[in-house]
Length: 143
Image (cartoon, rainbow, N blue to C red; front, side, top):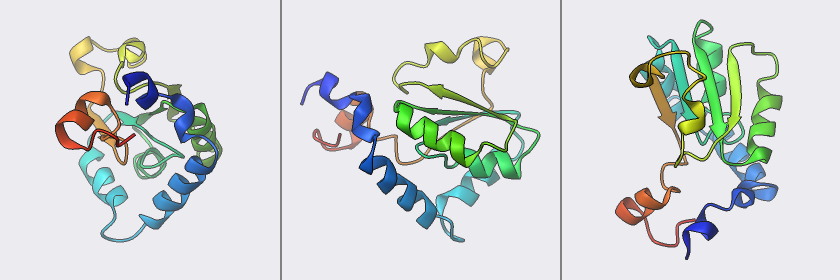
């Protein structure tokens, strides 16, 4: 499978976005990942959520930590649009369509020196998709 096939932004649209929404909702339980991510981020000022999908954990983090600025990113416009709907009442979230393999477009958004752009980076259900991670940790056809 070529890298271009694996980075097809539309692979996470439509029904796949619906599937991720259901999966994320099922993770709202005491042992689920969302509360753990909030705990890790509780002292953070700027939080980057990679592969936010339909909005988690960015949604919960922003609600639990209202003084933090959260950047919700995903490679799929459909996923980012769903996240916007989920979090339309929140003022501390910025949304970006970003491929986690190239974060250079985020450099100016945090208004900080390059080494201080984000205090915490979260990623759930997305870490296995970048080419480098699939070759190291996943199966070659993971995308």
